Image (cartoon, rainbow, N blue to C red):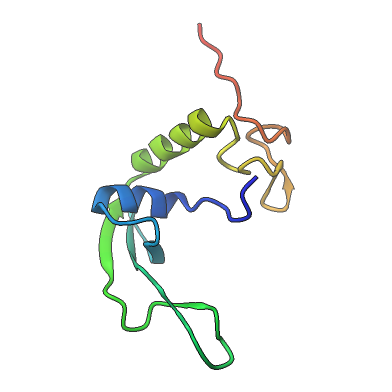
Amino acid sequence: MPDEKVDFFSVVARRKLGVSYEWCCCKYEAVGPDFTIEGGIPKTLKAGPDKGKKSFRNVRLLKCVVTRTDLMIAHNQYEANTGLCWQCQGSKVAFDRECERCGGTGEAPKLEVG
């Protein structure tokens, strides 16, 4: 399992904006049922007490609208590509308890057809 959790807002925004993997969200705003996302490619601080941390100061930010449908598509693609539950991302735990979506298996739930 990867060390870092997938940020599905960033995944959708990167696709919509056509930007590189380094691009990430720094501001999220709910607008009705959808979201306005703002982000950029953060700089790594080179000195001071926050050395090594990411900063968006003096970074050109781009905005993007991410709909609930966009997120649902990204979740489905993640599960199809990895076989892991999108909510816990294979950790078996979501929101500090057993993942309800996969029942704590970490695997993408099987869809029943028919």
